[in-house]
Length: 351
Image (cartoon, rainbow, N blue to C red; front, top):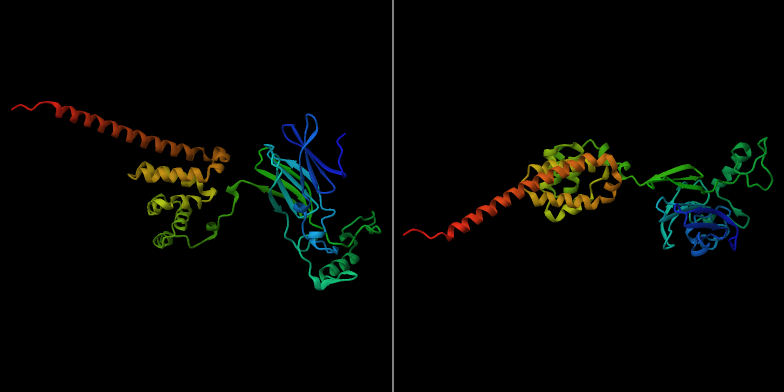
């Protein structure tokens, strides 16, 4: 039996089974090692889980931390992070080893939900409670349509006394789960099931909707010194020749900055273009710097890219390998010629 000071609301085991986390009614998370079931660390999450104010609150958000707690917890696939959600608009991500808050994700910005806004409009607060017109309108609609009420209803659709029917739905996270790969996680909230992903290739690219992306616009942007913008437009047009001209116009000191602006969704084509340019260009060090900074800036995405990036990386490896063989052959030939010249100079001249 593991003693807690308050009621336990949620429980989760780390994937390796060596650690367990429990969440209690006072907003505290306790981390237990499962060998002797002793507490390794605790997190007081009342301030972290604290969301916006409810329309029925009589105190400020800072002083209304009672009742704010986690009702669902889940470990990441590697066991390094713990995802927790509960009676607020946030999902909190904690370190399972350092017991500190890593991130806090807001589930909703819909002000029609209770507990989203941090400050209530004071002119609607009276001694009898909130007189917010939005709340009054929703209560009137709930009286006209009992099926639209939020609360406990009888089978006939009538509200049970004291069930809170007619109140606005509050922003909540009732269940959070992660995919086995750890790249995607989902949370069941008041507005439905929300799915989050770390796959940066799914991010929106604004150039996809721009009709002004033309070769002339690329040259104008490059002439103005907007190298990152010019490069992204050339990538969108998928013109290797145009990409070469833009890339070779980038100052050597700005390559790292421009590489950081390349969206992951376009990284596959950029790697192929760099490989083709490096194969036929005399600027060896220049394109080696491009390869280095692309790999450094997008290393985490490349590790997760899988089979979609294999062809691009093979093309880059083949291009650099061929360049290495050409340089090695030239260097060895020059060394042999220099040795020959050195030996010839030692031969005495005939008088």
